[in-house]
Length: 210
DNA sequence: AAGAAGATTCGCT
DNA sequence: GCGAATCTTCTTA
Image 1 (cartoon, rainbow, N blue to C red):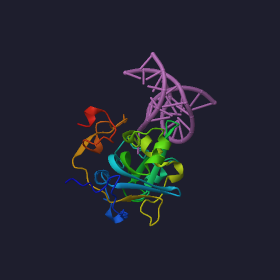
Image 2 (cartoon, rainbow, N blue to C red):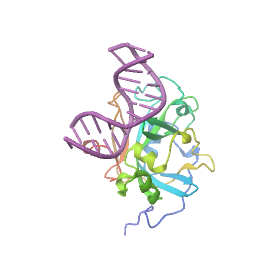
Image 3 (cartoon, rainbow, N blue to C red):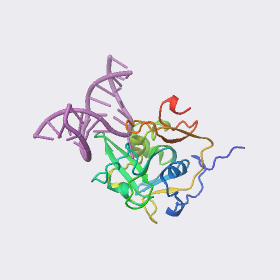
Image 4 (cartoon, rainbow, N blue to C red):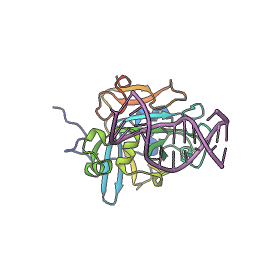
């Protein structure tokens, strides 16, 4: 019988990922993070979601990356060593969460684009003003909104022992898909988006998710 | 100094 | 499908 390791009704204890467990290269980390668990501990309780879609923003060569033209006030946390949060604000409305992916001083990150809600669902539904599970964290702006993230979380170390925002081991995707990145116009041809194929919690148009 | 574009989402046509 | 919402950054359109 199929018994998912993570579900709404049965949850194992979450084990924090250590920095040493994170691949030290951006594309490898983007793939690695699929199926891993994202946790936010708030005073009012825990929010848990399983990552199902990521995008890599490469160091040095990637014109689509916020870090392409060097550090600024907005993007400086992209230059922290791997395992830190880079949270940026865009379109005057939305925040997006990234995990930094390289060494100190190298600007690169993995954008978390979508996640499957597992715990803290009522709070996510309130924040997102919708009850539909597949709309809570499908898309980077929605994901950050569901977790209540903003610029105050920019630069947090996700691997610090008691960080309020952290990563845990999870279950790898049964099938992994890849495509070009969404909403990107520079370096648009690069295949740097990764997702769990067949997941209802993934963003993107049908032709990208085949 | 001012304008355009941006790793987006929502609501209306 | 398209425009609005609405802030930061980069360019001079």
